Amino acid sequence: MTPEAGIKVAGRYLLQETIGKGGMGVVWRAWDERLERQVAVKFAHPDDDRSTQQLMKEARNAGRLHHANIVGVFDYDHDADTCWIVMEYVPAQSLAQIVHERGLLPPQEAGAIGSQIAAALAKSHSAGVVHGDVTPENILVTDEGIARLTDFGISRALWSEATRTTTGVVRGKPRYLAPELVRGKRGDEKSDVFSLGATLYAAVEGQSPYGQAEHPMAYVARAIEGHLEPAVRAGLLTGPLATLLKLEPRNRPDATGAYELLTRAAPPPPEITAKLNDGRTLPIGPLLSVTRRLPRVVRRRRRALAITSGALVAAAAIAAAGLHPWTAGEDSRTYTDGAKPSATAGAGRAGTIGDAATAAPCGLLDAASLSRFGETRLDPAYGEFNRCDVVVETRNGDELADLELAFDKAPAQFGGDVPTRRVGNVTVGSYARDGDECERHIATADHEQVVIVAKRRAAGAPEPCELADAGTDVAVGVLDRGAVPRRSSPVAAASLARRDACSLLDASAIEKAAGVETQHPERGFGNWQCGWSSSTGDAGVDVLFNRDNELSDNGKPARVAGRKSYVSPGESGDDSCVVRTPHRTYTTAVGDDIVEFVELTVYAPQSAGRLCDTAKKLSATVVQNLAEQLSESK
Figure 1 (tube, one colour):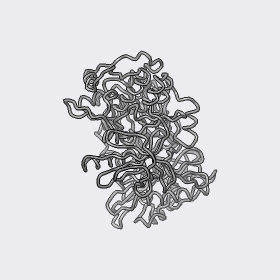
Figure 2: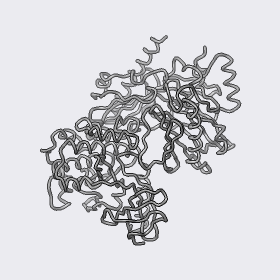
Figure 3: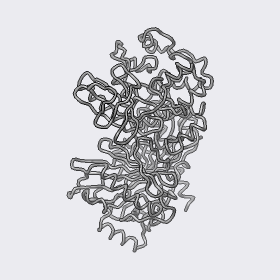
Figure 4: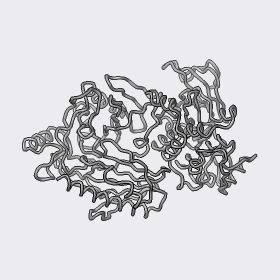
């Protein structure tokens, strides 16, 4: 097929006019007749099947990113000799066009653009997607001043300038490439940060940080040599650019650190922030919930833990004996986390989560209502305290799928390409399926969110988006009638759920142990997670309260404050170390042992040994502070 005006692609996209060209294809403005909206359709002609598969993979990567500062990808398709990507249509100019027409940008304006793009990269990196081609050509700026990052990964497959070096083919524009890329190393998140710095440098200085050159290979040579020109016009961006353009990746901040640096130096004007916060796009604000969310512990499923008729009988017996869920009896190992077997609305304004300490995530789920997908059971003690799961199994007890529901204090983040629907006081966002997972986000009336994730675990599992929709319908039904239900009884006095993660460490302790001057901590839902980061964003500490059956498969054993703990270097990135220290163990109503533990992560551009020593020292401080708090509360 040869694209031309008037042709309809995939039976729905009517091509109207060309709006851009690349080395191997053309971008068209088109009309989506099915959804009645403008879109951009990018055509390309891959040389072989491998290129087609690579394009499809990268389109999938971009398609799962939903952020106000990212141009969304809606669809991908191909025929015998052509493939195309359907993207969000953004009436805007590229940063390259703006500089060409207007001249060099003032540092304040360039910094405000950079702050938004850093937020986009933070979102991308948190989803495991490296852009690989952050350049002025791939940053769009609307007339309102909203900056959008486009061509995620796709640029590497289709649109980049390929420069051959002694190490192979360098994809991307040499003026903006990180030194490690031209030296033959694989690009990562820190490479994107360098390219963002190089792009902003060019916007205010009028040239690459490698200087001026007539041939691309000259930039490559300078990058290999580590030759960088000092900024002379950058003004308030001088310091942030110097940090983003560090030659060694480990010395650069991550995207969150870049965002913080640029926002402090040159925050976007209030009118831009207002547009990003008006409900049509994502807010520019704290990025903890997006970028500091640590990988969850890999847990073995507990077949014994099932809120079935037998479990309800056991729970009733415990209640009759005065040992209510979430409270401790005379034996601290005889209580359980409470979860109602059916979803019933709580008192309070409809559509709100309310007080985090008493909100019951299991109150929004009903295992019985999901029985059409298989044998279902409610798991109220799987992971963090803000979470509840429904497990779908075969008749033999083999796990097929999992439906996870979790509370998040961050406001829901819906991009323009995310279908939404309003139900009472809440808004539901439905994200496209991503492999074996499917997500639904519920924006609550108190500006928080409920995140629902359905996951396929084995062959024969239900379609994840169908499972996610079914679980979401239950939760929305409850929220339409009232607030999130409350936990049936108070939390056990010794539980971590009664503690504030931010109270267990302070800036002086972190600076003394880690040598990091931290900013104000960022709190997670219920104060059950807390993060401290350095001014550059490349170092910091996270404390998370969690639960598991046991910890023996979560690292190497080590003694921390007299307790057998587990140390896992590199778990949250090469420059990180995680220490898990048990707090207490209890037994549920159905005889399942649960360990509450503190998961402490240190990240910094340091050796693994030094990071783990720091993590163990800080974990010991946490244990001591916990003991003091518990002693004082008696």
